[in-house]
Image 1 (cartoon, helix red, strand yellow):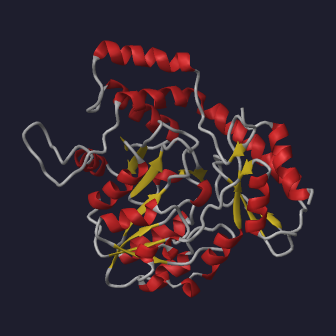
Image 2: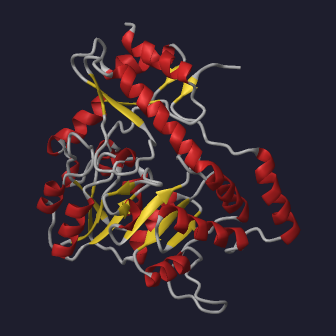
Image 3: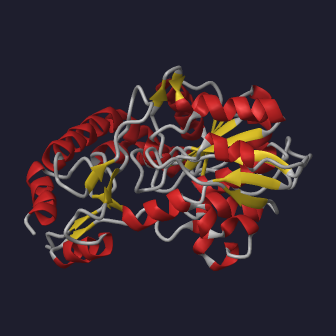
Length: 368
């Protein structure tokens, strides 16, 4: 078996625990359409995450698209160039125009001053990302949105279980969208969720994710199919039993990296921002000019020795062809994001990663 180390591995609960749920699904014959496990998972997630209104989805991208539609977002949406492509794709899918603004060089989250400077009469919403699970400047962003009467949809794909100064970071804005993809700290194989600010928004979100149905014979909107199968919901219920242990182990790995890389010239570990509870979803480092190798040289060096970090996020979203013609896609307007995309390297982190493997990864960066 290969001893290669990849940037992440899905957390998998004991198979026997999952089998118990599968047997119940087989007995009930209920596979979809908001079955009992679907409803149970929503209730347990509300409790675990400290939120009041959550709707689970078949994936995070569909959830992002639905959140924008549910809030009747039109025109321009101010967002970050430094994210996975799904963030901006959701904006385009809804017929909106992404407006990119630069990021803070320390947190790599959107710069609130840049957000406010980008607001025009066409702006209807802001879509920030809690990059790597570190909260965006939620107080400043929510204040800007209130001042200019804008909607806020937080792409919280990385932020499962993260808390800021006032509790769950998911309670900010009009909606927050989670990803439960296999690579995330909590997964349902594929999946996602929308945390809604109000019960009325949740009710509409639930209609939109079920083709717009409002009862058996009434359709109230052009919805889509964002429903979660009972199998996925059951897997999520099993995962919740073990997620605290998984997050704790991630924290141990994070601490080991920080201690091992402390003082290494040219390597900057992105520090805690303003979370009171972290989830250690990623371990990003910036490779600067003082390091003996460039970021890409280090990336290739590590791959050649069986370790596979990732350059999250490179290239920037504005560098992809479908975005290059946007006025705000010019890279000279986004110097902090551009620099981060050329220096960033996310090191492997997942609960099953051993301390010896972390030592092996660090040695590839320090024994040059």
